[in-house]
Image 1 (tube, helix red, strand yellow):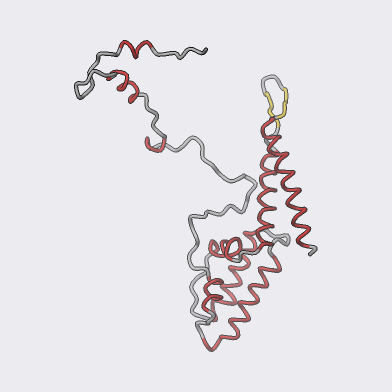
Image 2: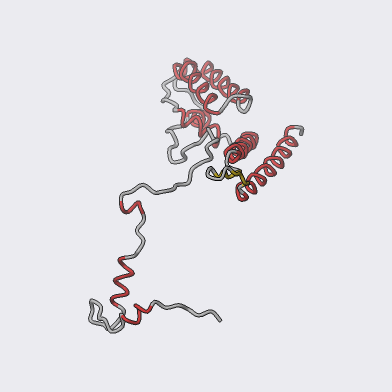
Length: 213
């Protein structure tokens, strides 16, 4: 049977009085308080490590900032135009903007490029037709990724995410001993890479099946 080790100093501290005059382990309690771990943040220092997205994920989105009012959702929900004299023209410009998104999303350009295209189109073709508020690039991004609730977009985003994780791990699968000049595989990262590749393969199979329906 294993023996539980007890610090002898605990026994030596018996008989000491605490702040209330009780015969307790006052000295031990004081030592524990002095050795208590204090997070770097409470000391005013930056944390030594933080969770981040994969370095290859170029389309990182800060969910804490929604970018303000979403023009596309507000326009579709209200079903009205700010300027009645341009009602038909505004609807046409809005529809053309939706076509711009549908024809270019996931078609060889990055999300930031598409967001810039939509932003420029809105400022040039839509906003002058009515008393519309600015539509920020952050809000456009959230509209593309979340507001449309499109399964095709979600499938494409999952593809991008898995691929970025794989690319980020590719450069971290072997360990180089620079003193001895030897190399050996990093088992944990290789196992994770294998899982991601298998997951991407399964995902692409499902994505292809959706496209042929």
